[in-house]
Length: 83
Image (cartoon, rainbow, N blue to C red):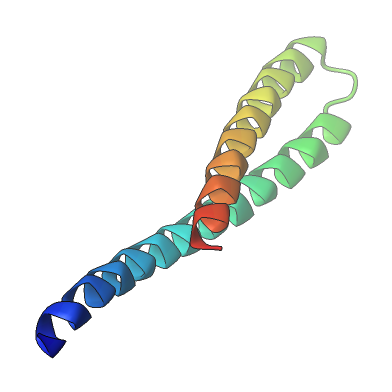
């Protein structure tokens, strides 16, 4: 009986571990995206007179920002589930 009572707790602990591992992965992804965003801002400043390049960089910046928003939302939901 004591073993069966411990089994669900161990399963929950494993799920918590997986969730925390996923949180770590999402945090690393957010850091990478923040770096890409900063780099794109630098490139935008460097190419301030090149209209075509500005359009290209702006499009990429919007993609990075949208991806970061999605990753952040996923992170927030997962963090909330972990309590």
